[in-house]
Image (cartoon, rainbow over all chains, first blue to last red; front, side):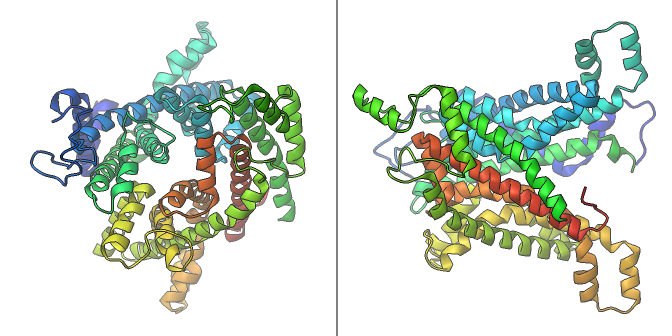
Length: 286
Length: 305
């Protein structure tokens, strides 16, 4: 594969990403999902809390494309609203984890020496612990609301980000532009956040794309257990949990949410892998 | 090797101390308590209950009391299961979870390694593509989606296997498959990568040139190196299987420790939640140490240090 002369990093990355069919498919599905979630109040066929007790549980029909649950609520409508919560939790928890991870990793890498050793040892220790248990403890004792949910998930997802950023900063801090910044008297926080962090954005974007599905999966897991999003709010995890209860007679209630959760995780993972191949300089060699 | 194991065990002690301290203060500093109910108890009864569980002492004294009892491996009484200690509940429920985890790991290893070897031996053929596509689907299907789907197909529709329960041998099949599937998928990908790497090596060509049967070359010579990525994945996999069992035990109605943990989390049973979380931390740390020892045993280039 030849690289165009004078092609910028981002143009090159875009070209490589668009050549990857799986990643393009992931991008399309993710984009469609985001649009659907954003437009939910306008495109959803029914109101969020609309019940039709006379109808009860109905299999998919023309009026209810994904069927209804035992209260006669339209499943498609509930899934659209659920996608908003699942996506918001996924994106915000990822943001929280990125802020913690970038700060921690950049500071550790830039300070180096003994500080770095202690900070990274702590990361190693935290890595070996069963984190979902701590998320559950956090959720139980600080209340099961959405803010606690994404803060708790973000607090346990930052470890890999911190490692990646630290590794990048360790090599970057030897470069001349850092030396120049030091010589010009830029403060340590200034060097870390104005000069080093912007230069590690590539790997961070890649890892963030892979963190979103991981967090969405954890949200669904917790909501499934009854420890995440609480009714009357709804997320895909809650819909799956409700679907399991009724699957003997009303299998569509588990099939649609289950399929769309898997499809979303699939797409985001493909997109993340594609972005890594496109942005990671290691893959540039061949 | 014994020295290495000892060193790792000693290293785990401060980790556990940090975990215990963190969970203790996290729980105690949070608002609300295990005896907050919709209908509040009369104050003197509440006082008696708090005195019984030493909740009326200053926080520092409670902390020292808890750490002291941990030293003698006593996790305290359960707040919600009257007259049962956390130790008793764990002793009763953990063997069930352990058996489930054992079957799940067996599923993950046999399916994963088998599929990975096939894919590596016939790269870029329909076998390879089929196995790897299936593995991709496996990686992206959460176990709480896969489990109900398997029940729908194999129990409710065909009636071949029981829906739930934990008595007969048939009861083990669906939970083990559900819990192991995602790790089988990861292991298939890792084994394929590891085997493709190894099969290119000179010593494999030497083994073939000696006229060894292909089966021996693959299973004895190549697999030992090709399995290394899988072995280092086993630590995270065991942690994931322990976590996954929370959901699987709920779906299949299995009387294991995971179900107790979720239940006590919902009930705010302090000692039970802390005890179980600590117990899982010990278990996972121990498994990680075992995995690291196994890794060094398989790969002589890795030295115990």
